[in-house]
Structures are given as C-alpha cells and as structure tokens.
Amino acid sequence: MNVLITGASAGFGKALAERLVAGGHQVIGCARRRDKLDALAATLGEAFLPVVMDVSDTASIPQIIADLPAGFQHIDVLVNNAGLALGTEPAHEADLNDWMRMLDTNIKGLVALTHAVLPAMVASDSGYVINVGSIAGSWPYFGGNVYGATKAFVKQFSLNLRADLVGTQVRVTNLEPGNVAGTEFSNVRYHGDDEKAAKVYDGFKTMTGEDIGDILLWLIESPAHINVNRLEVMPVAQTYNGLTIAKQGG
Image 1 (cartoon, rainbow, N blue to C red):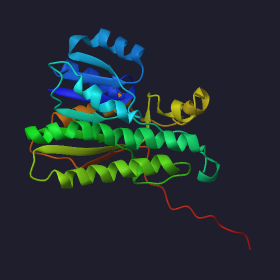
Image 2 (image 1 turned 90 degrees about the horizontal axis):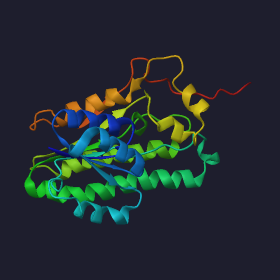
Image 3 (image 1 turned 180 degrees about the vertical axis):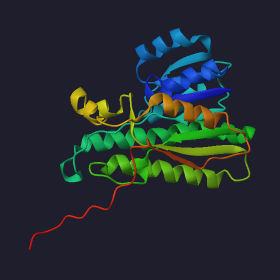
C-alpha cells in the first residue's frame, strides 16, 4: 500500500510513517523541511520517499504529484496531516498574517492536494482520504477563532466528500484529536516560545503523537467496506466545558 502523508517530518505524520513502514507499507513523506525528511528516510529506508512540499504553495502541488517515481505513483491513502495554529489572541487583537497563513495551509493546501489525488482514486474505484481535523472544529474556545474555523471547514469538507463519493469504494474520514503533547503544535502556535508551549500540558496526562499515529494506522488498516465518517478523540482529562457567561455587576 502507498500512503502519502503531509506534515510527515514530525508529530502525527512521523509517528504514522514509522508504523506504516514497519507494517510493510510504502510512504510518500511530504514536508517543508528537507533535513528532517532526509533524517527520517535514513532511518526508514527505501520504503520511505521524502518529498519536499509546502502545501500552502498550491500551484506546485499538481506537478509534485505528477513527478512521483514509478512504484509510488499510485496513491492508496492520502493523509492530509499538515496544518498549524498560530496565536491565541482574541479576534480583535489577532495578527492578520497568522490568520492568512492558517487559511493557506489548513484549508487551501488540504483542498489542493485532495483535488490532485482524488480523481485517480475514483478512476480505480479504491482509495482513502484521511483529513486530520481537530476538536476545535466542533468546540469553540477563547483564542481559537480562525484556527477553529479552518478545522470546521475540514470537517464539513470531509462529510461533503463522502456525499460526492457515494457509489465508489473511496473512503473519507475526519480525525478530530483533542489535546496532544510531544509535537510541535503549541511551539508553533506560540511562535517558538518553549515556556508558554510547555505550560499547555502541565498537570495532566495528554495524548501523544504516537497515540494519534496508532489511531491513524488502525483507520488505514480497517476493513475496506467500513467507513469511519468522523472520529473525535480526547485524553480522559479533557472534556466539554460549560457555556461561558460574563456576569455584570449591579
């Protein structure tokens, strides 16, 4: 099986790539950082094909897919994992550049790569698209503004892909993780502030990138006649909060 993973150089993507290669699959690992991809390729061997890809550069995606070497050209599974959150400020104080970058990566990049890969899956009447969303796509929180909105898009896009693909054997899943430590997510969100990023995970047991890698592998290796439409997962320590009320004096 050939599995294309974006954001493959770290976090969920790296964990999944390691598990897939160990299970005898081939991985097309896409990410922006060539050095990290090469380091992973040195560990995983010829079953891992490192491909430099910035999904926010949507114009480059069709050619990258067209140029995949023989043996990797047929994509059985697409894992749209690349994405990011930037900033935790309320909307009226947020940096517009952060908002635009999240839109470019989390929405435009995901859509462009899916558009490039999906026709071949439909033509062969087989394939699987797994989009990595977030609980932020369903549950708003302070400072989530555009990040949460991008993940709400990913959720609805996934459901609408399912509707469009009725009658085919192509599967679509939106995986929606909650709090996960041990990845670069919070460090990126806080623009490299390691101290702030570490505090996000203080005092409770979170999920890890390895946990999400295990879940992704389970999805990929699940029976072909079963489609998991949405899968929301959280650490036990995390759950839904009550609606916030700003009380006024008097």
